[in-house]
Length: 509
Image (cartoon, rainbow, N blue to C red; front, side, top):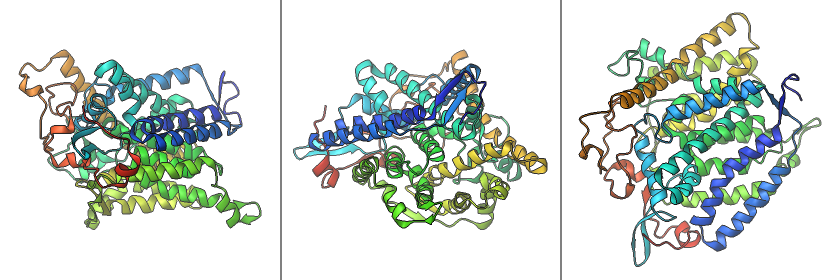
């Protein structure tokens, strides 16, 4: 299938899929080698290698054909986007980077698995978090130091962004630069929420505020917001979703979900219903639905490996008890209606005319309506991260509809997407403004005490607050933090299945 016959650079979809799988599997190789006992890790590594060979051989006759200008434009957009996200520490970092930098520091400075305290019986406090995204860059940092690690993290993130955009381009049959533009600027209509329901913060002026919180703790983050705040969860999810929307009945769904769970458990939960739909569709054929075809469609080596990965990952995450704080929460009906309509509901309804026969369209609407009622941990992270798959499907459908819709439907679609663009623009503006402010006029009142590691991090600071440093790196290490949010990262592994049977013996240094 040729996309553009005049394009001089045909790229096989098979190559793109291989690179995406390799990107997702590489951190797991490192985890298996350094976190697991040899008698567990080595067999898992061999199985991962066999699964990779199986995926590598999977043929695809689809070709993504790109022009040199499209590739260059997409690459430069990706570099600018990652640069302004703060990844690598070359531009302003938002508040959440304090925690992500602390995890990154400890992965570099401590031996693996990261243990902070031990007794004669072994490790009694260790890092338990979805650390997979940092492992390749942290491995580089162990040999080259903090600056080299950040350069590697920047490069790793840029490659991930290119892969995600290329998978979107493959699905939409778009040039790479257009797909990258869509990723950067797709968002809900937060600006309209700020305008119609004004409050002390955020406001539309100055244009550097964090518009996402117009509905309080409820938030469906734009993709730019996700990259700027929680890149370690967003990027693997986008790549996994890119594989999903381009996959056929042979796509190893269990392996894909297990990898998503390893990198980002909350987006993985939001992705699960879509995987079930894709699996059920595998039971259909020209002769009707077949339960036998359905049951045997996913009995493959990659999915067997996926099952093992899922079990090991679950046993690792279960060490941390913070996620066990789960509850349903009441949402005022009027607030829920406002939030749903402005954060994707209006767009979802507009796209419904051409999607009524697709069960994924119904899933997106149901999930966007119900996700706010469920809460995990001390904040509403579940709402923000489990919504990533639903928003990804909305983005893909919007891209398809842009050149298919006509008349008032197309005009309304452009209007909704145009209002949504303001949210990522505000995030980008803040990064440019704060970065230039720091480089052109470094803070003169910053003292050595201002830059010392802290034991407690307050939540009341504004995202656009004047930084004492360009990077959000006040914690440095989780070992001495006295903050309730630190419970999201630390746990006592004693008496857990992972520690007793799977984890390699640990020393502290």
